[in-house]
Length: 406
Image (cartoon, rainbow, N blue to C red; front, side, top):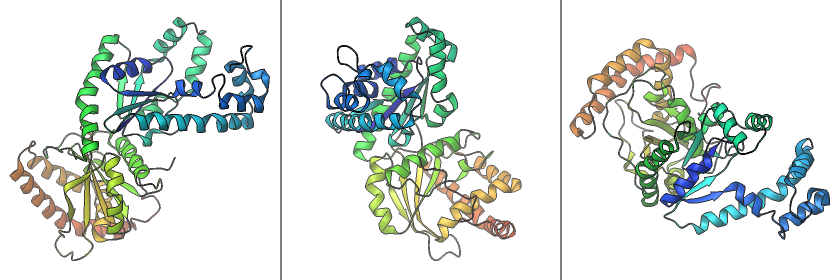
């Protein structure tokens, strides 16, 4: 099963995307619809609300007067918490029922207006954000009968565009014709969601292509934060140490468009126990997952397990290494040193360009790997001198994981 979070500001066109995905076969679970269902007339949820807040929050027909309820809880934190304690568990239970009923081969799209505001983004394999300019959204809401002042107030009360961008694996611009949005959703379904679901279900890692570097992308750190938070949720520890390492973690350095992350584990046994949770989250083990080949002079502490993303739209290599071993420390030291040393960055970038080859050039990849290893072995004393001079430590405050607990 592939779990997809869908969100967007009011008036952005989220419902249009949900409907299009449903036409392709996605199982759409609408959070707003469920929240209405669990407090419909005759439900235990509505009875509990009436018992807590009184008949003044009910309409004449006995249904929930949402406007009156909103006024009641708007400025009363205790009342809002009580309402949430009544509604949220029921919404969660019903959502779980619908997701479970979808089947193991389903692509489940969870339509959640407040996904970003509630910090749910790490719970999905992928998050889709639908966006449109504010003025266009205001016009759409006014055309639906909402007063302009109310429309702007509702937009202002939701997550900002920047906050949604932090959460978005896919950004859908709904500022043009509906046909353009439909075409973009169709491509997303065919080229990413369907193969992603298959890869997750079959525990198949994606091919990461060749070794041709691209120009630095300022969005790499933000993408790494999203992936790291997802990994932390998958392993059941939102405080897990997941570091962005490798070339994409060094600002300004050309790199293959693949994110390298390091998950710190306490032992090989722990890595073994995490294999299935990581695979279910979209990071299956690679066929060459275990490695113990040391660099020159290194005799111990060189074990690594490798997982690779199942998402065809975002290449990720996840390296599990045991804390305080030699290669665990080195994976943290080298990018930190490269960030500080312009000359070293230039040398490494030149090496990357010299050995740049597209996908399929197996011999070239081996040649590049050997050249890269030789360069790093020669450069390591410089990195160590820098660490000693600056007091760098992988445990020092300031050298922190890229993921942050919700």
